[in-house]
Length: 402
Image 1: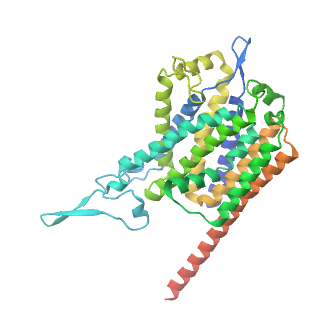
Image 2: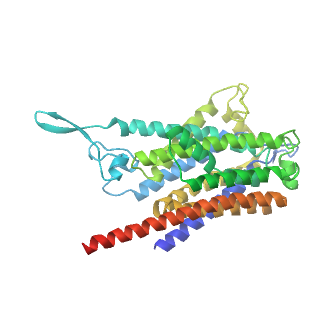
Image 3: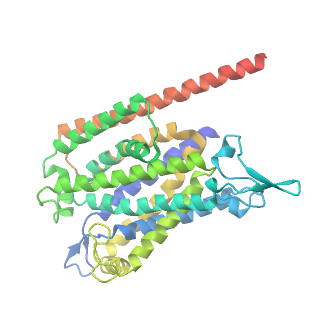
């Protein structure tokens, strides 16, 4: 059963996110108007994010309700403390030590709520992640107007760098020495990849050139794209470090986090789209007194070719997240890292094949260095997990002998 579940998870992650990557790249090219006389690019990344986050929250809710235990209340299933259950949701209970505070009235001890692990604090942490995600996505989408999708995939593969930096800056965490080696290899590989691509190759073949003709000919286009990508990665680092902090403090599941963060992302981005705000580069490019939502819906109406990739992008992104959290829950981070590493490699190769991107030998070298660095991380994690299991087995053998 465990092997079948693993095959199911791997197949789900691969199929959903490979399909999602192709849909995302299709959304970055110009679409023909309904009259066939003109073409234009869709620039509302907030609209794309809202569609995906709404479906992600909906799929997470359905998953939670299906997997809900009969003994659980709805509040508990959604990841919050039910006052009538007397079970805190903080990480302290996960370690077997529930730190509760009591006060005595007429000789009887009554529990006093622990405000440090309150539902309000948990919601605020979710809101922090949702805000970072809402602002990170537009920068990632805007970067595709200046750099090729393979460069984008490779850049996203170095997420370990901002995650480490944000963990150190925000939460004062320390890391093992090998992680700094991984950071160095990944950074070096990205530098090689970006440095060895010519201006024409950075946008690949004919399709990519036509897709980026509005920005690809600009001076310093790759520098602008790399800057947008760096902002996206920095926000991603803040997101991942905050999620690590939430998991370390609260007893919640991945699907519960997925539900609330995506629900808040939907609310934040929807409010930003509805308000008639002025034009803001990257975030609200269609402003100037009219709402981003009206501009996005008008574009969809005038360019119906976007509907199919938009649906594919939203649905596959939502279902892909479920497979990610299912893998994490049942097989741990080591298996998930291995799956996502190989998935990114196939995503880049699939993009090269489907959209005829041309990579130089130097760019292939840079990609190899990046994936070698990530492989070092996966290899060390595997050895650590194996060593811990061996130690646990020895301790169990000693207990049995006693």
